[in-house]
Length: 245
Image (cartoon, rainbow, N blue to C red):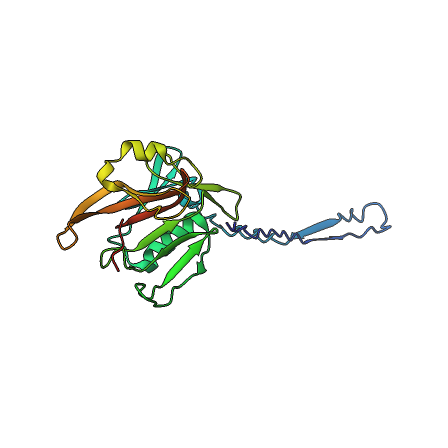
C-alpha cells in the first residue's frame, strides 16, 4: 500500500524600514526650539501561502482478507466471520475476477494451459504454489470460470496468511473424513484404482446431479475435494466430479 504524504510550505517575509531624521541647533535662546521629527514606514507583510491539502486514500478492505471459502457459487472473501466480498465464478468475466482476487492476494502470475487431449486451451492466472483461476475447462459449464487450489494458505507480500477452505473449515492437508461423513455416498467416488494409495473425490457443495444414461451412472456437479490416504490434496470450485473424456 502506498501512502501519499503532502508537501507543506510556509514562508514569511517581514521588511521594516524606519528612518529617523532629526536636527539640533545651537540657536540662541529666544530663537525657538527646533523639534526633531520622526517618520516610520513599515512594509505590509505578505500572508503565508495556505498549505496544499492532500488526501490519504482509504485502505482497501480486501487487503485484510484472511480466509477464502470455496463454494459451488464461487469464492467468499472473508476477514474472520465477516464476508468482505464474493467472487461469482458463473457471472464474472475473467479479467474482473482476477482484479478482485488480486486485491486480496496480490499480483498473480500467468499460468495459461495449452490445448491437449481432453484439455481445452485456458487463459489462467496463479497465486501461491498451486492456486489458479481461469477460463472454463473440460469439467466446468460453459461460461463458468475454473478455480482450484492445492495450497493450504497463501502468504501475501504484506504479511498475511490467507487460508483457503471449504465452508466447514477443511483445507488442503486436513483429513477428508469430516467432509466424507457429511456427504451423500452417491457423491463420493473412490478413484484408487490399482494404486496402493486410497484416493477419494467428493462433491461437498452440490449444484446438480446429471444422469448419464449411456453409462447408467450419475455425475454430481459442484464444489469438490480430493484426497490421498485420507488427507485433502486439492479443492475445486464448481465442476464435474467425473471425467468421461
